Image (cartoon, rainbow, N blue to C red; front, side):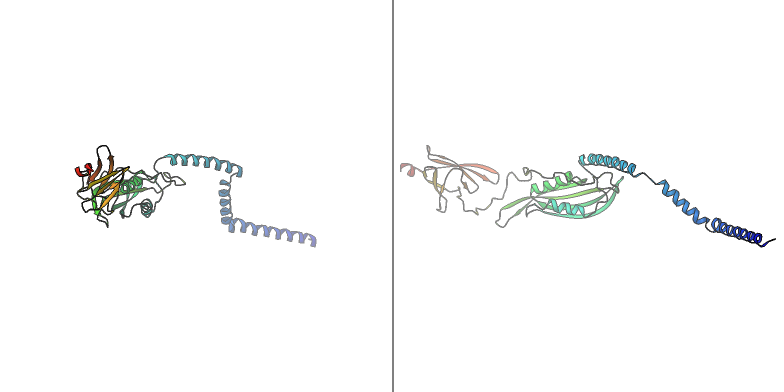
Length: 294
């Protein structure tokens, strides 16, 4: 065998050896890595979408989301997702910010409880205040966009006095309030907008029609009790009280517990309307005989 043929067989043997070693390395040592890469490639191909198609789907889903959000926003109440227990304290502080200085509200967290597919926080509220302040607080809780329910309520009338000794008629209250929330966002809008919680003043049904307390005469007005009509002048009348103090009054001017309602020049009389603790009384004063002769 010549030298050239020997070299050819040697090269062929080396090539076969290289292919065998490479095949063993690829199909035995790298098989697991190849299979893992192939699996990952299959997963990537599975979630591969066309960009244009994705944009179309996004616009459709966004439009549907806005439609559902508008439906939820049109509902009177929503149930928020994962509401903080502190939110109700902030709500009460906000709604009571404009209350009078005579009104006070105390809030106590009681418990967290489930209710079917929802949850709620329970609070106990106590305090006292002017009738319209208490009414606004109850209205705000019941009409708030985020669902709140007054579970129990107890009201009572209270009477206190100010620094001048005048009576202050208030309403004491005890409320148990449940504030609802959900663990998902199916019942809440993307952007929260509170309902209109403003209230117009109402007649105080707790204000007594007849009262034992009579406010003091802190403004030194004419006390019609024991007063005398001294003289009548155009558009006015001179009067004196039981202490000898004189007053010049005209129609519509206030007196202690009431107003001067009429000056009758034809009959030389003046008329008053007085409110004595809820009892309305009309008082007429006339010139005495001596004044009439003059």
